[in-house]
Length: 499
View 1 (tube, rainbow, N blue to C red):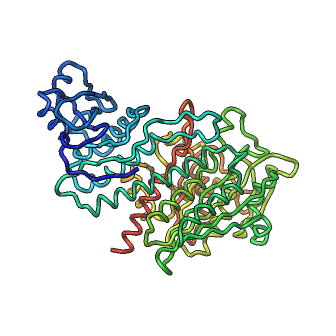
View 2: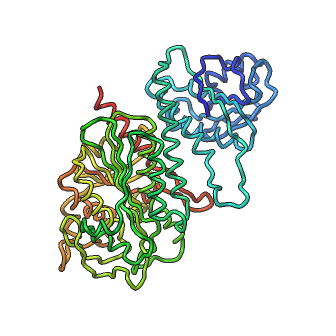
View 3: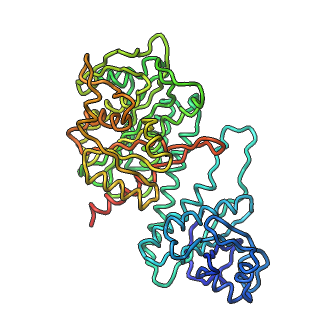
C-alpha cells in the first residue's frame, strides 16, 4: 500500500471512497462541511432525517453524491466534538476499515486526519490510521484449504494534510506506521500458528529468515548441548519432558556502534501443557499463544531493523515446549539456574519464569542500557487488568515510566504494578534458594519478583502480556501486542540518544 499526503480539498480529491466524519449535535468535520456546502446540504439533511448516526463507531456509505470527485462517501460517527481525541480518532478509523471490507477499492482518501488540530497528535494520528487499517485487514488463512480472501486491498491511500504540515514528519510517521504494522503481522502470524508447526526450531528459522533482509542484523541459535555447558539447568528443566529440542535464539541489531544496547527477552514456550502440573483441557489449545513474548520480541526487532534506527538492540528468546512424560520435571525437584541460584519447582506450570531467569542471566553479558522481558506469564495478570492493559513491573522507576508513556502514545496501554520485599518473601523455600511460585495471593507480582532475583545488576522491566497478547472466543487470534508499545519505546530511546 502506498500512502500519499494530500492537500486537496475533500471535493477535489479523486478516490473510490472518501472517509469523512460527523459529530453529535449536527456538527460536521472539516471535510464533511466542505462537501455539505457543495452538495446542497446533503450531509445535514441526512442527519436531520436520521439517516446518518453520529455516535462513535457508527457509519454509512453514500453513493452518487454530487459535486465531488470521490465515487463513494464513507461517513463515520465521531461522537461529541468536545470529547474527540486520539482514542476516538483511532476508533473512528477502525470503524472505517471494517466498513470497507468486502468492497473492491483501489484508492481511498482518509480525511479524518484534518480533525486532529494539535500538531503532535496529528502525526501520531497518521500512524494510528495506518495501523488501524492493517489490523482490520488481517486474516489468518494460511492453513485453510479454501481461503476466504478480503476483497478490500487498496493500492493507494491518500491522507489529508493542511498547509502547515511538516513533510519530513509526516513521512516519518508513515514509515513508522508501516514498519510497526509489518512487525505486528510477524507477531500475529507466529502466534496464530499451531504448535505442530511453530516449534522452537521453527521460531529459530523464522528469526534467521528475517535476518537475511537486513545487513546490520545477525542471528545465532544455541542448542541444548551448549545450554548444558552454560549451566542453564532451569531452562532445560522445562523442556525435559519434550522430544522437541529447545533453542536459545539471539538476534543482534547494530545501529549505534559501541553504545550499550537495549535487550528484549521474549518467552517462547511454543506449547504449554503445564507439564506434570497439567492444565485443565478447556481452552488448552490457546496455550500455543504462550510464545507470544517471543513473537513480540522478534516482531519488534523487525520494526527496528526496517526503520534502521541509530540504536543497538538485542533479542534473546528461550524457546521450548512444556510437556509431561516419563522424563519431565516433577513438582518438588530442585534445579540450579545459570546464575548459580537453586530453585525448588513447586509447580511445573509456572515454567515461563524458569526459562526467562536463565535467559536474563545470559543477557547480562551484553551490559544493556535497559533490559525488558515480555511474557504471557500469569493468569493473575488477566484477573487484575483484564484484556485491556499490559502489566509493567520494574526495578527502575524511570524505565517503567518510559514504558508507560510509550504505551499511552502508541495506544497500546500498560499499567505499572508494585514490587517489594514483602512479595519476595512469598518465594521462600525450605530446601532451595527460592521457590518458583509464591502462592495465589499477588501471583502476578511474585512472578515478577522471581525474575527480579536474576536482574539485580540491570535496569530491568517485566511486561506480563497474558491478558493482551491474544483474544479468545469468536474472534480468537493473536493481537500483535505489545509490538506498538515496545517499538514506540525504542523509537523514543533512539531519538533521545541523538538529540
